[in-house]
Amino acid sequence: MTGGTYTLLLELAEAATVAFGAAGERELEPGWYAYAGSAFGPGGLDARVDRHRRVARGEHDVRHWHIDYLTGHSETRLDAVFVTEGDDRECALARTLAAAGEAVSGLGASDCDCESHVAYAPERAVLAAAAERAPETRS
Image (spheres, rainbow, N blue to C red):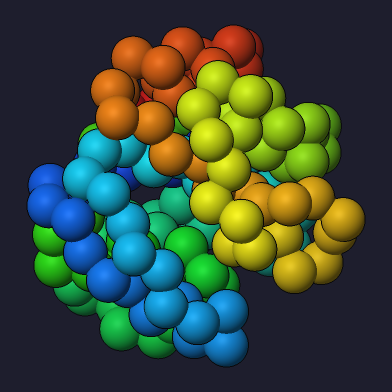
């Protein structure tokens, strides 16, 4: 697969304190979290999404990005992945997700000017609807 933009839709079953590496700890409410990312390097979207899935299953314990700390948390479940091939819409997608829910400040946006690339909502439908605006969906 080529490069592109993706959204991870995650469910956190219970309130949790999650340490996000250098970004510090966050008190997270139970509910739904969406992460906007992109992959344009070797392996493209397939390799990046596969890596996130391995972290979520506990098969890969290297924490490289902020989202790895949430996907690797024991109370987190990776529910769906939404993919858009080709275009780099990562920041636009992050703003759309934050507008639908609320931004979790300072996460996933260390290489841009966005407030965050992680959004929270108590209900799945809110973030899923925002993520589904991408033309391709993979769950």
